[in-house]
Every structure is written in structure tokens, then in C-alpha cells.
Length: 625
Image 1 (spheres, rainbow, N blue to C red):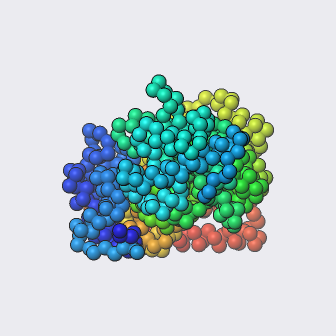
Image 2 (image 1 turned 135 degrees about the vertical axis):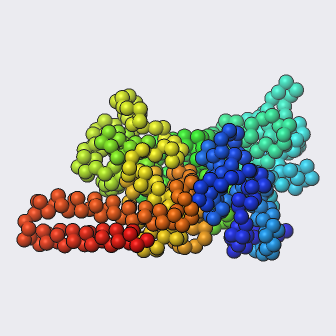
Image 3 (image 1 turned 60 degrees about the vertical axis):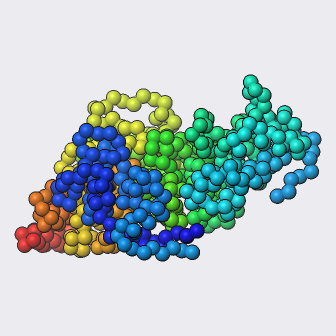
């Protein structure tokens, strides 16, 4: 069986494929501005086209449903291909040859708990053996399609529950277990036709405690005639409490305790844990059919200790369920001494799909995109406020100050007071007073209990994790300049003089969603490299990645390609001029407060002359462009 396709070939194929040609075979695309094509979205029903494709950057985005990605993403979603199959299909299309990288049980005791442990251990062994039978072919294919071979299945103890009525019941009964014991372990159920196997026709994962003892199982539906839930877990038993167990902790424990810093990565499913471990992120764990809660936090606290340098990194899907999970996780981590972070994979992929599509390195690099949980939640609180107005800044301060007030570490709290002050453009003293008021009122808990003061509709704080789009941006001159500048940078940055672009993207923007996109653009390592803009969009943290995709694929207002380049350069100069003008206004106010013959006065006047010279150079460049 062929190994993974070498990354250089993956990149070469993508650079040689015209994404508009591939999508155009399924979607009628029409020109929609300079360098952009538009058609009806193939992923949702719509009457007017909102699906944009930019061939030059190899990227598509739907402004209606938010779907976006490259040519491989499109093929995988449309044709249900694996990542490898998508690459192979495109390689054949452009004529490129691909290269590939090559327990024994305890002595039975009379203790009820001991018997339940023994029954679970025997069941786990039986399920593992069934995975090798002809009937389990569907289960093996399911694992293989997600990048898991026989070795991976064995490492995680994955098994198969046959479709029959009582295969497990008969096998364990022959080993001396009673029906009452098997029922108490949650392995069998009682129905009108008698006792039957709880898990039938499913892949089965053993759920173990931190010592490696099997407490229960999680089972994934495989067949269309299975009317049960997609995932079926062991019911609550003497051994198994879903709120008190983390899947994979038995495998992750050693590397968690040996890490420097200690780090736990919390993902959302069994296959995500498998993907992370196989990719080298061996400290990943997952909850079992329930939201992350206080009991889970207690387990982690016991593993990482009271270590302020330790890290808990949560990965969440950007859908509604993932958003709610993040809010709940935030509530549980507020009292944690360790640092908590959020990492969202590019395009909202879970770790399993990320590994499939982009390889092990992409899963490992996910940890590099993490942002502090407090910063993440603060950003959510600021979404929807027009920070260009006094009312908007006041509303945003009321919404975000309880979050900062809940930070236990005084030094960290002072740091986030500075962060919030910069985000809002307010004086430090004003933000400090607001945070202190929130702390006296009980911070987040009190804010959640008391009704908020009525505000104008456009200033009402939105629910957390609202999908931020171009349409949700404030309608102000500042926001318009930042929006248009980012469109120009993403779409034509490779044709803007390097020094001009470098200076422009280094300047902080005033609106948090646009600032998040600017940070990703500024952090791009090589803006002259083909495909850099797609990578920059992938690096934008949620919930702002959709906004970045829209800025990359949106119609840039220009007559033709040359005028678009000229406009992008002009927008870069306008960003610089705005910064210089703001600095000049501050200095002119400052010079009124200092003696003219003082050292400080001379420094201010010198800087004013530098600003005027810099402004003139920018204006001269504009005239000669």
C-alpha cells in the first residue's frame, strides 16, 4: 500500500491546477470583477450567486454558507474523496507523477467492581478480535479512510461489535460472567425479546481510566440500517461516569507529566485523539459524549498539578455546538492556575480531517496557532461593537471588563487590562476602573445573572462566536479603509512594493476582526510566494477566518488588473498616512504642554519634521505611481 504523498508533489499539483476549471465543470462561473469568478454555491441552495472563486490564489469561498478551501477541499466535499484520492485525480489531470513516502486478566475475585473491570477487559479483547473477521470489513474501511491502519487500531484497542443479537453475551457467558454482571457493566441490555448485546454492528473504542483499566466503551454506527445514534456509549454504571473520564488520558498521561511545559490538548472525539497522537501530539484527550465540565477540569488539574506554566489547549469546531463547548470550557477554566488556550484548525477542520488533508505536521503546527482563552473570549465580546463611536466603545467595555475581572493572577490581569485598553482605544485608567467595578460585582458570574442595561440595537452585544463577515463590519470610514486595504493586501500583496507593504501591515488596525486578519497577513513569512494569501487566511483565528476568506475572494473595486494594483498600493499609503496623521495630532497636543526650549520640546519638534517629510514622500510616490 502506497504511503503518504510527498508534500512537494502536493504543492506542485495544486500550483498547476486552475481551480476555476475544476469548479467550472460543476458550477457555471461568470466573471465578477478583477480576478474573480462567481456562481451558485454547490454546497447550499441559493437563488443569487454568492460562491466566489479566485483562480490566481487557488481559493473559493461562499459568502452565503461560509464554505471555503482549495481545489482539494472542493473535490473531497463534492466527490467524497480522500485527500490522497483528490491529489491523485488532479495529478493525473495535469500529468504529474506522484512520489510517496514510504494483557492478561487478574484472578477473579468476589468484589463486584473487580468483576465489572474483568468483564470490560474481556469484552475489549473480544471486540479487538472481531475487527479481524470478514464481517468487520466495513469497520476496517472506516478506519482506513480516516488514516488509521491496523497498527493504529491495535494501539488504541479499537474493536468491532458484530451485528448479531448476542455474540458478546454468549462469548462472555462462556467465560463465567453472569448476565447480571454484564448488565451492570453496561455490555448488554434487557429488551422484550430478552437480553441482547448493547453494541451491534459498530466500531468500538475502549474508554479507560488513567491507570489503563477499561471502564466502558464508545461505539460508532457503521451501517445505514442502524437506527441508533451516531455514537453510542456505555450507560452510567458503577465504573463509568461520562463526566468523570477523559478518553486517551491513559496514553497521554506520561507525556503530559514529562512535558516542558506540561500541556494537555482537549479535542472532541475518539478519532481526533487518535489523529493527534499519531501525528506526535501525544497529550491529546477527549470527553466522552458530554461537554467539558468541572469534573473533567478536576481530572486535568490532578494530572498537571498546580503549575502556572502548564497549558490546557482546547480545539473546537467552529459550528454552534463547538461554540457552546468553548463558552462552557471557559467557565470551567477560570479558576485554573494553568494557562488555557484555544486553537482552531484551518477551515474549521477537526484534528482527524486536518491530518488527512494536510498531514501530521499540520496537526503539530495547530499548537502554534493557539491564542490565550481570555484573549479569545475578550475578542468574542467585542464582536459587533462599533469601536469608532463613543457608544460602541462604552458597550464593548461593559461586555469585556467582567472577563478581565475574572483573571485570578493579578499580574496577568493587569496585562489584559492593557490589552483591552489597546483594543478599545481607551485610557488605561478608565479600563482599570471598569475592571475593578466588574470584580466588585462578581465578574462573569454576576454579569451572567443580572440583566444588562438597554442599548441601541446596533450596540447590543452578540452571542459568543457569531460568524464575522464583511457585512457585519461597522459602516465607518476607518473600517472601510481597513477592509479595502486588507482586500488589496491579500489579493495583490505580491505586486505591492515590499517596503510599502511591510510598513502598512505592521500598523495595528482599530477594529478587532480586521486586526485579526492584519496580524495573519503581517505574520506571513514570504508574501512574494505563490499561495501565501491562502496560508494567511488559514492562519486567521476564529471567528474571523470567514471574514478573511471573504476579503481574499471578494470583488476588488477596480476597472482592470493594473488599476487594482494601483489601488492596492494607494490603500497601503493611506494606511500609513492615517497613522502619521494620528501621531502628528498627538504630538501637536503634546507640544503645547512642554517648554519650547526643553529637551522634550526639541524631540517633539524633530519628530514632527520627520512626519512631515515622510508624508510628503508618500504623497510624491502617489503622484508618480
